[in-house]
Length: 131
Image 1 (spheres, one colour):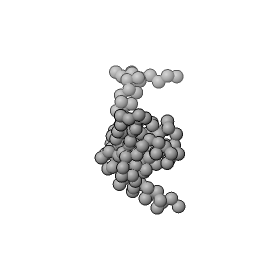
Image 2 (cartoon, helix red, strand yellow):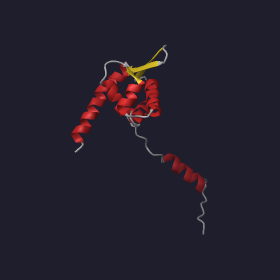
Image 3 (tube, helix red, strand yellow):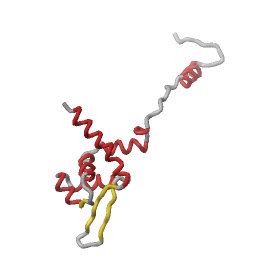
């Protein structure tokens, strides 16, 4: 037997009123999980990102593509993708020289250098807590 309701609202109206007033409370997300911050956090989780950044932090002079490739034992495709992402985020500067064969050098930008202390603390934390 279907319940009968003889008021001025139907069961559908009552359900809609109750569900619309019972929306979950949304908590404010930290900046690192919002769109701009999340993209940086996402890129740090990709393969070879920390290795490439660590290598660039420890070199005061610009580094050529093949030097990175051979030192890190990384494929050219992965390295070029990561470097392109770094350039797009403003972490790395890419300088192309008009020479034959073409010479391209990569170095950390000011923004990339400012990430250095953060990653240094992260690496220290991993070493101290990886037991």
